[in-house]
Image (cartoon, rainbow, N blue to C red; front, side, top):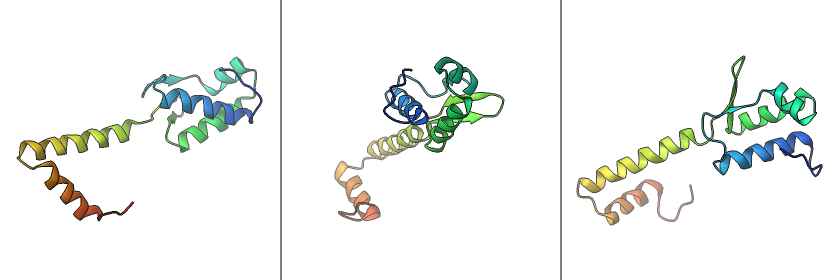
Length: 116
């Protein structure tokens, strides 16, 4: 990780890890360096890394387990939800429902033209 001085150091850490996680470079469940390890590597205060990890955890990108470390947790629930939805749609298709019938049911539940 290279710090460039454009933003605060903790923001740069958050941005770097967010990019690595969302692009799939870092995978769900992958271990991240401890606050002390990363701080030593970057030559910064461990509290700065801790602040970044807290923000990443709050945003749902990582999970920090006391005395165990930090792990990527991005996408896990969302992927499970999407897979569950796809499974349900496949079951409807197998049961003989047409795409138009499913879309009509979606419109009935969510309302036609509503954004919510």
